[in-house]
Image (cartoon, rainbow over all chains, first blue to last red; front, top):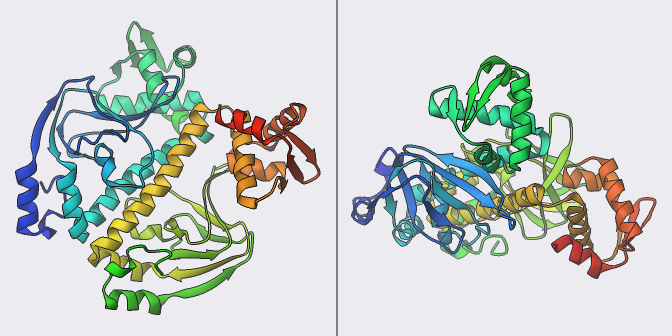
Length: 217
Length: 217
């Protein structure tokens, strides 16, 4: 558990025992929605392997990815019902087949109420997610869409460990909170500039240096 | 102190004493920048009267208001250096003459490290600010600028307690993260629709019902 909780040794034996006894292992198939808005309270998710995506939805059904979670990450907002002041709806979906351990919300909440180390650590998790959302807000406010597409492709390439990405224009649009047509136009522009090569269902990154210059401009 | 900390009675006598002994009263003139980015660490600000504005800045000098603080609010991000995971820069400015009590960062941090109630309450403050930023992100992503201007004017009218607002187009643009020209165009559109009347340095709200219908559309 130290992988997820650096403060594990600062919990009492009893607290550690309660967490360990409560753990529920889950295997989630890629594409499954695990948590859907604030009404839902699936519990704290400890990611063992796989990948989760947290996103928000507009009334019209548009999506924007607010962050992603990888091995050894903790998903806090799937237990957001324990924080009264969380007044927003996040949807959590498995992007890949994912293995998790779930800590039930009431168990976590009880221990957080009595343990300053766990509460302070939860604060740090929230601050980290807050930082990701602030980064996104800055991107959306000050960055043009061509830069955001370039930045997204580079991030994706780093995550996948390769330059040939199997991803649709629709999926990219859903990450970036825009329309498919906008993404298609941007990708064609990038192709015209020799930065990518497009084919059905894939985007191949040809000129990482140029993409990086654009993404960080 | 119960006005700011509903959990005041859950602190020990010693903890309460340390907080009370550390308080520094401050009077801030309207327009003063109190906190500027993560390098700065002014301490926790307890607002007694007045108004603070938290905003972010683009490299090009554009601003967007992320939230405002009023009487009995706590400004947490002026002490963000105590949270390692806060990786973003917020600027805090007094919008009106403001009276504050400051709790020095190191005092607050020490007590938070030992007190689960204070740490949990800090979590709630952060979750409340997080919720405001998520609301803003949704506005920026899914709402058109005419709706955002209408919503801003209604909020402003509620804060000021009147329908005649002394505010420049530039100031509105800095709240909403856009250019003055865009705001001027929107206000002229609203004037054409009979919702507002414009004169030098003021915006008068004429048709609250119509503005509300637009702002909530």
